[in-house]
Image (cartoon, rainbow, N blue to C red):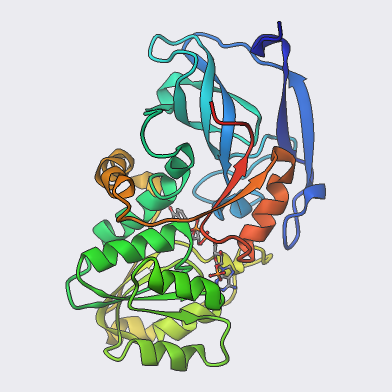
Length: 340
Ligand SMILES: NC(=O)c1ccc[n+]([C@@H]2O[C@H](COP(=O)([O-])OP(=O)(O)OC[C@H]3O[C@@H](n4cnc5c(N)ncnc54)[C@H](OP(=O)(O)O)[C@@H]3O)[C@@H](O)[C@H]2O)c1
């Protein structure tokens, strides 16, 4: 009989630092004997791997809020997996867990980093998107920085993604007029019709500033920044006095070798704009808080989300490249293994 212990595991490691878009050739897939659990460790079989824009930043050798991946090191990434073996009394084989981190078919992780999931609760993949890190980012950004009031106009870029789609739905619940920005008619339609945003502007149109002004006749009170580039320039020019900007990410620029020159910030003085950076892990308590708040909304269907799932760990690098150019529609995931 074949057991986990006499199988091998596959891992994706960084071979070369990509210039521009990441390519499959920038990574190696390595196979090695299955690791064994040491004291306090849990071995999981990966079911879903999350692909996220931050991963592009980890491929660049520069100082940041988290050190870069080293050459030869396993790529980092959140997973949902099934416990195969546990050397910790808190976990047993067959349980579903969130948190083991790596582009790997099997992850060995300290038990204290894992969160046990309810097998009979929401579908496992939801814990990497709507109920996971991206959903928590949206929640924390609006709660801690946006402080949206009823009647205000809130603009959300990358509106169909897992951060943007949750942020917009939360701003609607707060009574705001919510305008999304997304790439293409299909995404814009979904953002309006399924998510219930009041409007959605296609950033690929000829006149983004004009379309945005038409969608925001009273100006913009809160901007949830996910994109940067031309989208940021169009929004910044239409911010109201005392606007708040949640600086969450600037994905349009992640494949570029160096940061673009910044905008002139004199408008921040004149309009007393509050611009604040967000790193979701700075407030770890928000993760469990968000899961508890949002799980019933996912269960009753009132919090909508979508996923793009690609098959096979060996396709993860292609998936990351697709994500950075908008080839995903909703949360980008890799299916690494079957459901339990
Ligand atoms: N600070 C934190 O703690 C934190 C945590 C999580 C995520 N984030 C950030 O939040 C943002 C959204 O993350 P996500 O996971 O929800 O990603 P996502 O929206 O699923 O994917 C990124 C999206 O960005 C859009 N995009 C790419 N290039 C663009 C361009 N040139 N102009 C306009 N839009 C472009 C694409 O959507 P379209 O097809 O609509 O253009 C693409 O689907 C990212 O910037 C990410 O780094 C930050």
